[in-house]
Image: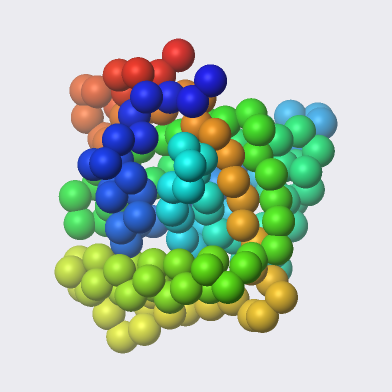
Length: 161
């Protein structure tokens, strides 16, 4: 069941220039983490982009079990949320995903520049060779506040947790 937190404000937040980390687990429960390089929300599903060259273990886990955790953090404010899902699917990027990557790269560059990391830092973090960009779609069924402070770890209203 999708969480009820993917309202207009949350969709806008997820699509802004955020630092995004994806986490998965293998059959042995070993964790794997990779940096995502873009996000959008399509028909109630979060779609995150990943460079397959830097996320092989995460992609293998998602293909095997579909369980994902995605953390979205705004560097300038430290506002952070976590979404979890159990139905992640992996597919090669389509043209619109490359366009999403370009928009994300510009927004992430502006966000990082606002905290003193300019000079192409976002370009370096979001570099992806043709054929390596993957789209991971999942239905969030849990959502948590992860902003540092007394509310960290609390479920966001509308989540089943």
